[in-house]
Amino acid sequence: MLQSLPRKETAAELVRIEQLEVDFDGFKAIRGLDFSLEPGELRFLIGPNGAGKTTLLDVLCGKVKPSKGRVRFKQIDLTKHQEHQIAQLGIGRKFQAPSIFVTLTVQENLLLSMRQKRGLLSSLITKTTPEQRERMKYYIRMIGLADKAKQVAGSLSHGEKQWLEIGMLLIQEPELLLLDEPAAGMTDSETEKTGELLHKISDRQTVIVVEHDMEFVRKYAKTVTVMHEGSVLREGTMQDIQNDDKVAEVYLGRRGERDADAE
Image (cartoon, rainbow, N blue to C red; front, side):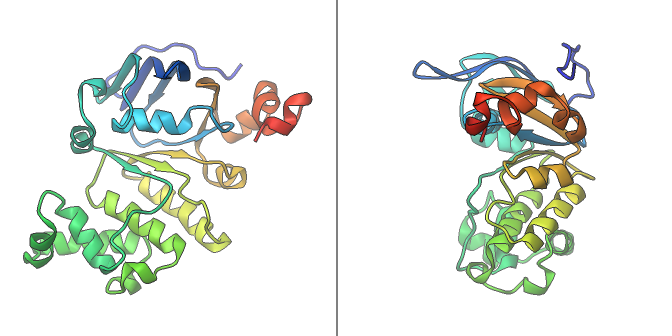
């Protein structure tokens, strides 16, 4: 069986969630969920629509407050903190649609993110330090936009806009990065570059990715958590998940009458 046994909380765990419940006016989007994450993991969350994947990210970033359960990041109780406080603790969240300043250059977008506590104007006119310039160069190269640093962000392709927003989060240097379908709507080439970028990021930071593109998951996932009806169904490598009968039944669409509804 691939289902994880209960484990003792350890100092090495970055995230520890126990018996989480999220209730939206009587509908339990998450029910009795246990989940843990160690530093440096690249964890993919998969499962049918309505399984609770995005809601779990919402809880971790503070957008949604749980009705029950324990949510800890570096042994800090996240349920007692607001969204902006959680960001300051080191959790960065990227939603599915890119959110960038389309009239500013790639470089200016990164500069604003690096100086997010300042006002918009002061962020742009304040002289950058050598250390800040090095940081910007590093992250522009990482996201593959070094040759477009002075290009207006609105003129970028969809994939490039997604990479820019990821870069805007990375430059704030969060310990945990939450990404919701980062490869959605990309070309094959952009999808491949995105997968490679995720692996680069996980060399330094911990990443949770919600993804529906199973080919993308097969190619780039290290560890996979399968969610179903608001709780964890199975965890393991992609090979483990693909060979599990229960996952095949409820999600991958190999068995019985439920196949048509699996997606």
